[in-house]
Each structure stands twice: as C-alpha cells, then as structure tokens.
Image (cartoon, rainbow, N blue to C red; front, top):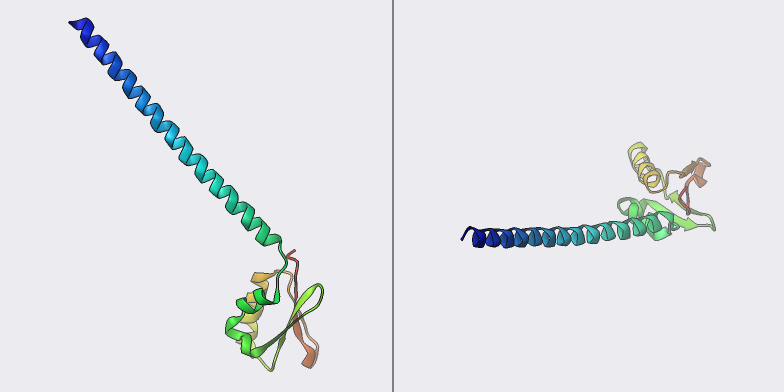
Length: 123
C-alpha cells in the first residue's frame, strides 16, 4: 500500500512539475512577445527621429500661434516668420516649441525679415 501511495505522489509530483514547466513556457512566450513589441516600437521611434521635418509638422506644433506666423520652406529649412510683433512671452513660447521640435533651430534677426530657421534634418 505504501508503494501505491509513493507511485501516486510521484505521479502527482511529475504532473505538478509538468504544470510548472508549461506555465514557465507560457510566461516565456509572453515575455518574447513583449520584447518583440518593444523592438518594433524602438524601430518606429528611430525612423521617426531620422525623418525630415515638414512644414505641416511645424504648423501642428505651433497651432496656437499659427495666425501670427507665416510658414515657408527652402531645400534645407523651414522658415517661420512672425506676421507682426509677437511680444516677449509669445516669442519665448514659439522659440521654445521650435527648439523642442528641432534643437538646431536658429533665430535670424533681420528687422522686418527676422525669422526662425528650422533645419529639416534633425541633428
């Protein structure tokens, strides 16, 4: 009778081990799926970081100020020109938004022709 109990407990132990292994394998599959999702996200993010900025990107970032600005572009840059006097606070806000979008943004002070020059390629 003790032999029969021992066989049952061995079977139970093996079943328990098999169940735990199945659980670990399922967990590993879930982890691998999450790693793949992270990898795809990073690839997409990197591709987005390397793409050129467009006038639409800049307009979208400056939606709140769009009526105060004139947008144009050259081969290498997007030009954002104030349509009139912006005032210190609005100027600082626009400058901050543009520099967060493209750190290499420059302000060209040229009287009535003053403008922000936003390189299309992120540096």
